[in-house]
Length: 220
Image (tube, rainbow, N blue to C red; front, side):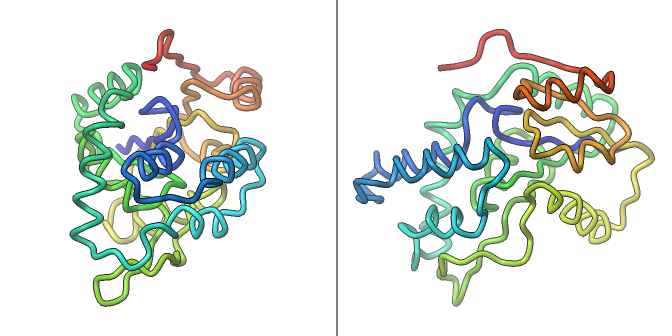
């Protein structure tokens, strides 16, 4: 059995990439005065289902271009502890605990960069986290992204690649998400669950009789 989770607004309150951009400004790493406005525009495109993923990832990675892997890992560790930890949502946390008690495999798949997804997954106690592939050259971040782009239909191919690499064929699969962007994968799993769904996903889930979960009170 396999339980797959989206990340943003599913397991944490907020968008992790957007929060990381704000964190880079807080740490005086990203000094572009237009960064937050640009980031909000990309977030709006994501919510509308028309995000240019490559353009967004290159924008978000630009302040970190040339960073060494160890430097970035230390920075992301501080981000997870200071910014992500207080935003963990109780419903997702409960579902993780329930699946773990059943002995199910646990996995995050997110359209966020893997440099954020993997550490957040570890913090949440999940075995694996799949994000957008970021490129390294001689242990230095290039600012470019690779072929793995788990956004919309890309989440299906990312999951398929992971299952093949793990030599794992689950008997049943759950997928939890808040976003209509994840309908391609939600429509393929055995147990689709809408968690804190946006309006379009809420309507789709109600029409198809999917389970819907909501966090009544989210961390600020």
